[in-house]
Image 1 (spheres, rainbow, N blue to C red):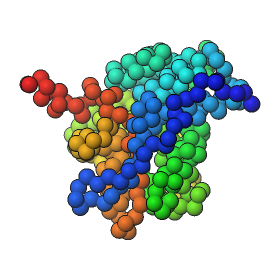
Image 2 (tube, rainbow, N blue to C red; image 1 turned 90 degrees about the vertical axis):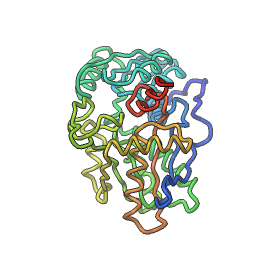
Image 3 (cartoon, rainbow, N blue to C red; image 1 turned 180 degrees about the vertical axis):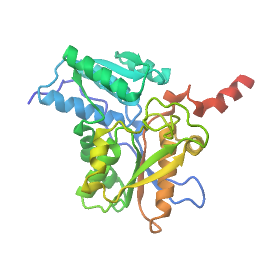
Length: 322
């Protein structure tokens, strides 16, 4: 087994906080994992670290090697940070629709960016072809089992250690790669929790079925970046397994996702639209569970990578008028 670089990660600090959140007076209380507190600002730091560390230990990669990923943003940002710390090179293939903030963050950590006009499956295919041709390590977040394993080994156990009774009745997450929901659910159930997995689905508001290059379904909203439809082999295979037999899907209109995101800002949570989706879906899931049930979700990333996103439209207009 190869030893990891002496320069250790910033990740090796305290676990991210898990806090109870209640926006409305009549809403159930939801336990929210503040994943935006990770070093690069998202929960993807967990999978980036785990995938790269494991590959390093197994001798698959070493200092100076090239790492490639297809990502709409957060995973590539996290991989760029980890590669910078490990002395690896990084190249991100991202949809041309991704916000500039994300591309700038990748480049700030020394990574390279190639924007691709086309659907997310096309972005993935180009990244795969390039990695094979150049002999690079393709992390394959949408099908790499180490993605879900990172949440099973670490996120789920942090959650149990942080809860008063170490038990979770339901765990809620939007689906991008599916790693968060699959991994947390696996970790919790293997520890003895009777946890219902809940997939949060962002739906386009009626009459707003515009093109969404990240998804296969036009009704799957593009306004909640990173939460996508039809790309994850990891999630698709798990969904058909016995472990997902009590899976529930909660659909939330994208306008509601953005409204809840802005409500979370007013409570001091610097989050992106996927946090609004997760919280709104968790509230709906909790309403169908016994009173006092413990429902956990994650706030996946920080607001700064969405400054050019429509969630900030109103604030930009107010600044222009000031």
